[in-house]
Amino acid sequence: MQSLPRVYPLTDVQLSGLSHAEQVRRLSLGGASLIQLREKRMPALEFYEQAKAAQQSGVRLIINDRVDIALAVGAAGVHLGQNDLSPAAARKLLGPQAIIGYSTHNVEQAINAIQHPIDYLAIGPIFSTPTKTDTAPVLGLEGLRAVRRAIGKFPLVAIGGITAANAREVIEAGADSVAVISALLSTSDRITPLTQSLFQLCQT
Ligand code: TZP
Ligand code: MG
Image 1 (cartoon, rainbow, N blue to C red):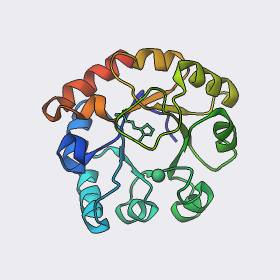
Image 2: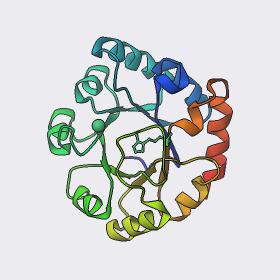
Image 3: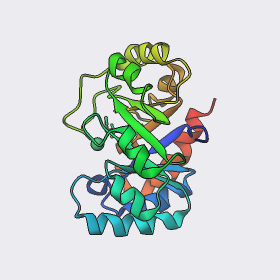
Image 4: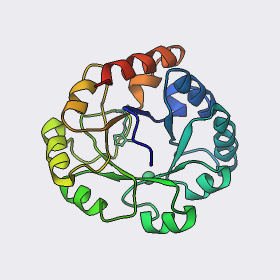
């Protein structure tokens, strides 16, 4: 995989009030080059159509949970949780070039994750967040530092409650990239400038 961009936005149709494709368009205009489509409610056909349309923006798309949709639209990869299809099974289906991300919530899971055929791991929630309700306990920056120490140089994405106010310290605590939902999508007419300024803040 090419190295992770500093900012890794996820889409949310409820929060933004926009289709996945329109969110991707606005995020990519702000500089995003790797975007995860996260959809928990939509019928498969509608999600498939929106993911296909989102491909027009020319960015690398990662599909949350759905290996079938990723395959069908020719996405760059998938992002899997602890209870989704295993990374090994997804790798078999998607092949060696696909980007596979894997969610973890503590040091033990992170150490285990790097034994799987994945390209990056995500750790979270770093801070409390209203965006996902079934989250594990928050790790804080100390928890993030502990994960970084445990996994060496393995590509690491931090997620959960990350905003313009704390993104910089999240990077400094060891994340290669910050995954962000509400900080970019809550005001739908500001997605592009907010993305631009988050990239600037996270420059090292
Ligand atoms: N996984 C852990 S926290 C979270 C996910 C999908 C939600 C992150 O959303 P926000 O709005 O950036 O806190
Ligand atoms: Mg999942």
